[in-house]
Length: 203
Length: 203
Image (cartoon, each protein chain N blue to C red):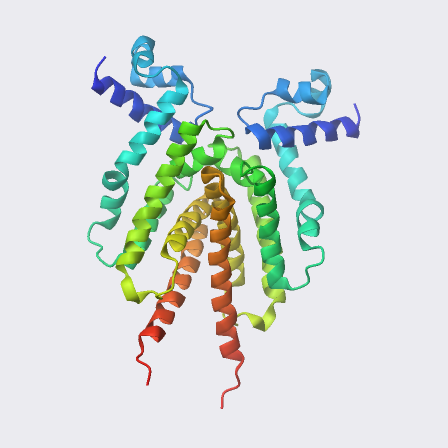
């Protein structure tokens, strides 16, 4: 009964919830894949909801290490960082034959009446992702229009990522993801052009 | 054992899958809510997957009657029809205290390995919705840029609807849905402005 066992349970549950969904994963699925005795699991987690909370906490705490760092390595331009992050999801779609789903998004729709703690953890995961995009938009400074609501555009970017994955998965076609990202890119291009207009000094 | 019983089973299953999800709904949930004997259900549907297929067929066949007609009643402008359809989802969010989820979108993420028939029915439902938006975009004619990829923008509109519902549901806040629709509206406004520029006769 050590932190290592707890960690193994959480990582395995993370895998299983992602592969099969939360409802379809049983405690015995987790036990059999971790090779942990039920007593050890119940020592750490009174129930499956508690395992889920720990999984969502792990995603929350892992965003920098697992998601942002790999996507942004070698990418300095803040606008390109946004598309590099989206490209990370594209890679996941390609390597899973388009069966990939964003684990947070899937849980957000799978759980029909999540308890408050779970729903808050889902929201925190979304909010952190949105924060990361907003930092990029803020760093883009006057390359974007002065009156642009950057928080709103960051939320919208999450929306596009989630909706694009949903459709690409359903059509089993990464081209569908690409087309969605292309429209978002068009939107950014229109905003960048509008900001360039703003920066032209008035005569 | 008549068409009426079959219909009652399908409509009840539709309700239950929407309220609780597919995995969490058992055949006995369906039986107890319909007050139908298991023999009658199995007469029509060999298994739960077959009930799901029938539910998805009902959504497919009901899109005009259930979704488009009510949203578009009294709305003639093709661009406004797009936002009227989105507003229909907003109403659903408001009347369900933001627990509403698009039934197709929720199933698309809940089912991790849908069989081919189910996945195709999900895709057909998405494609029909996209078709409806594309018809609006086509009808908008030269109010939108000539070189605009209208199919792609229709897909993107579905993406925004699905992603916005996912976030609004997670935050339990319809304002989040509204902010997403506002960014889509901004995108449309930029496109409409670009097309106006195109239409200005060259000197």
